[in-house]
Length: 211
Image (cartoon, rainbow, N blue to C red; front, top):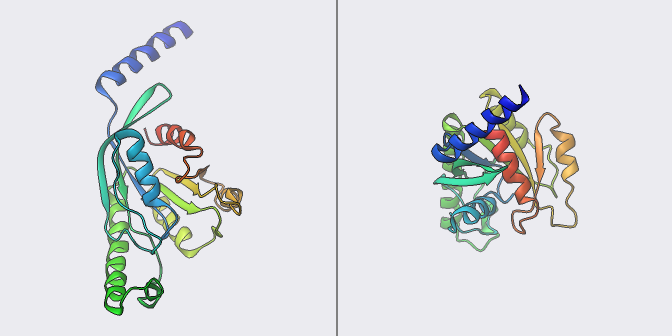
């Protein structure tokens, strides 16, 4: 029996390598400036040599959903084809005054706040068209926020597969264990998207979680 299972596993492994598995759409979600676009760029560059979007220290730099299609990642001697969907930062409150501190004019700040609000709505709508979610959190911040709790509730209600990414572990005050303690019902992968720390662990988790 064991020999037959081994033959069957090798057969399906061979079939998967030739024809590939189904493509899955994975959304990157989280509050502003937790590293969603940094992570999206890291994944895309590792597997395609390209990048998706620029990054900035100004909140809500990404104000529209951005999608990169047909990224094939390899893990555990097999592969998975992804569409990466980078979403705007989620927030429960958007005030144009918050943008004035970044040397934007009042008109620029108001426009950015308006676009950011529209982006949040678009990001929530995209949940109905995804196969899974990477929820990125800043491991230097308190994970018990209204944004994190609300988005996890939305994801769970839709029964979407979810991986939580505890980002910025390269910083001295990072405490990814707090995120693990806050959401023990979900798998938490500690990484640094900027430095690439634990990125291979993330790729294996993506493959195992979303295939």
